[in-house]
Image (cartoon, rainbow, N blue to C red; front, side):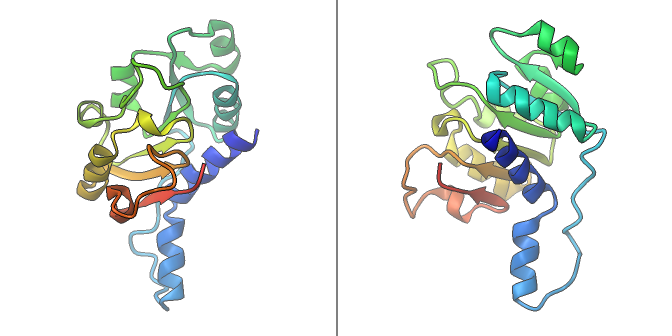
Length: 181
């Protein structure tokens, strides 16, 4: 439950731009311009990997009124029926999701799953959360997508190398929240 709840905390923090709002407030800037985010109700979450933590997350997101698309090499169709979610292809998940959350193991097939090619298939302004394994994400590709605005925000509780190197491009990327795993 803790990891699933923390994933939601990152999603909400990024969507509602809480880090930026906090920095502005501390600087005496009380403007709401650029801080509004979107209602999660009615939006689509894409969940990659549907193990125990992801299933708890899906249940929470359904409580927000979100639509859920899922991808897993071993789909649990009974769970899908119970929670009214849809298993789909990765391409469809990338294309249709407003928020994408990674919950898959690190394998040869998932290493750098999030890269320039997969990012190009995503909606503009998507939010990405990774609480699984750092090497699921090509960090320079993600930093470039954050800085260009292709990805609106990234919440990372797992990075490729911990502790993080001070020259990691994600440290200076726009709207990226990184926490120790």
